[in-house]
Length: 400
Image (cartoon, rainbow, N blue to C red; front, side):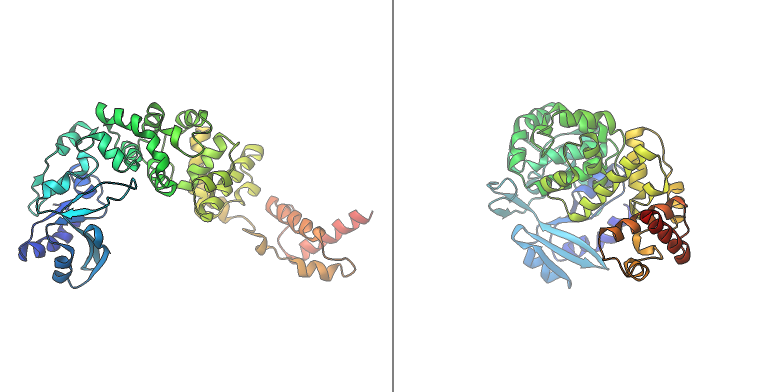
């Protein structure tokens, strides 16, 4: 058993010591079988939340109404959830009630896909009532029981299915694919923030190109913000995106570049993304347009923040199919004479001193912008005296 499970093993053993059943469940079990890196370790038990909280010293009732308690053990956090079955999903997300049960198989029956409906005990033995391991071996994505019911309960599972295809490269079984296509319109009932979170994971997946083809083949793009308004955008994505993006803001910049009828602001407003993502997306797009016009000169590199450089390198590779070496780009960034207007050895106060008879106005910003460009191009050094000489010469030329 791998190290993360070994670290969590005492939590299982402590539950069992108090007379309860406990299993590892969820994505960690799936990824363990696939020999992939493990994420969070989740635990299912027949102990109810109050019993879990009485056993462990440090707990947080993060979702006690749904049976989930966060257990802190040896500086690690584990979600421990009581075996349960769900009632009706009236809001396409949360069951209107949950019922705690005693059998792990009943708990596994409520899960989305067979590959996520596998439990593992402390000895490494699997509880696999829906053939999840076989589906892992055959690289098939299939819902637990009726796919129409699974997607009706929470339509986000449609996006989760495509995300798993992107991450794992699996294929859909025919019944699941048919239900996905039929239930696609339900995606419009889902909060766009939840869809955006799945889209981010999808774009970062190794098999993103395959996932985009599934989106088109099952008309899922017809229910996604902006994609549904420009049907050709999904084709442009399939043609261009052959490899994963590194960050969501890189994907947003890419979508905008592929169809610039939708601004970065449009994308971020409709997908309800943060200002941070909006600013970094705009930065990437502006730099790419500069690169198209000028090549990669200092004035283009200057538009980037250092942490955005890897995404710019990848963006160019996706669109242009050639490398802008990330390492070289970082070196050139470090060698820039300035990295922002604040680095200029001249500011507005100095301009006022040099031109006491002129009223402050747009001319000051124009001078500072031109100085910024000239310094970046190497036409003037970023020394106060050199900059002052350039400014005074500019003033003389303007008077003449």
